[in-house]
Image (cartoon, rainbow, N blue to C red; front, side, top):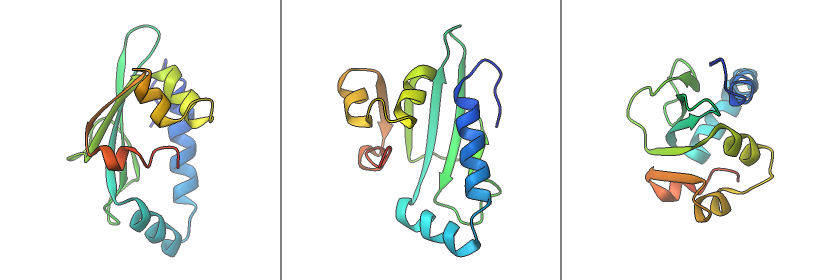
Length: 117
């Protein structure tokens, strides 16, 4: 899940590691709370784009985190690499990022609202 030139790679790797360490019941509980497939498309300072997929819908998915757009996403979030890092670190919330034009949302907006909660 590592993409050179993207600060967010470390975050996606950490998400994958943490999720993979959960017991099966913990994974199922988390998937049941979210029930969605997120495509997150980021642009770094060099203008390069990279997508990641967070599959928190399909319990039988090979991996909760994948590099690239895998399958049909319920929601696509588009933002800069820096904005995503700020979002994860709690420096900005999803609603504020959206309202300031730092994040664009395509698809299920209600599901996107779960980001950062």
